[in-house]
Length: 451
Image (tube, rainbow, N blue to C red; front, side, top):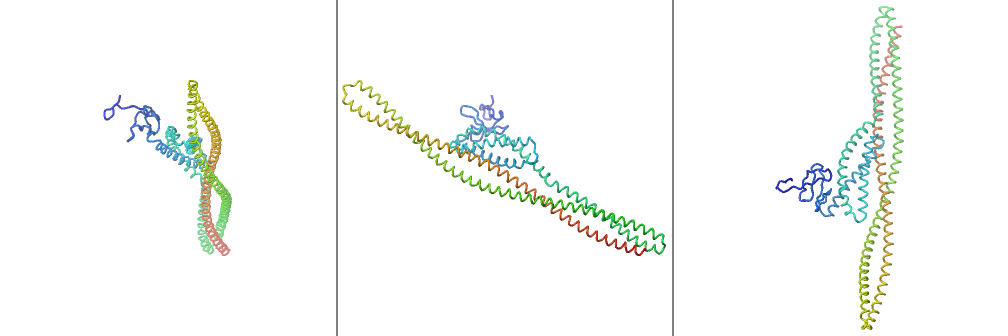
């Protein structure tokens, strides 16, 4: 036996969610308790039975609370639908797929029940019955949401790493070519300076003797051969750069084609959206018709109750007639009076028979109207399901288009940057070619002088 702070005997209840015994009373509501381990709310009913979920307030308040939770679940399901579309083609694990499937299935069951109860007039009462299921599912959803956030962050990292793999390879290749060209340019500049020095030495050696001049000439020829080789290498590098530019141009053309296809796809989706809007308008019109049918149904129900009341009165009158007939046998002395009353009662019986027949025909009419109403309800439910499926497909396709457009933009930006860099390199190469041509002319002049 446990005592609370005031010295009263503490009641011991086990939490129906986690079977814990540590709980606290909810403020201004002694029947509601909050578990300290799982933070779940449970209610103790007047017969001391423990019920999972928040059963406080009037049925109207409880239904409004449950409606709020269901709207939250609806928003979560929309987020999941977007994640489902993001998930396609990104190579996620089987565990992640299973996680998405379990959450979306549970949300679909809850939301289908919610829509059914909102359309059929007995929504609040049914939602009260579902509070137990909602509370347990809410806990599970909170746990799964955390896992989803973690998985989504990892997926984003994977997407960021996968986008732009080809541009990175191209930039590395271009950087290597730039380094090689820079090193060759340095070698050429060094050779040109050495050639100038040798030309001066040859000029001086022409005075000193023919043997030294010949050696100088050989060295100049070797240097010239090296210059020719380096120029050939530079031409090879230029050809490679041209090849890369062609590849970039081809990539750009494929991107333009892809963009055109996306534009067609988007137009188709817009047309589909217009069709869906028309379907929604049709559904709204059918909803109004359904509300009118429900009103008529209520009126028919009221008439049926009135008819039942009339039937009860008729039954009572029949009982009275039976009593009077029994009394007729005992009161033979009052035969003429009884004869009169008998005529009156027979007339009343005929009227009652007519009213009974009328009631039977009214009942048949009511049954036919009820069957028509049920048929229309089924048709509307089918149309609603179709709209729901179309909406999911639309959101998935739009997400795919946005994702592809983002990739195309990234590739186009990378291509434009590469083109700029290549144009700068071409300018540098042309400048280097001009300098090498000048140096070649100087070498040829020096040769002529030596000869």
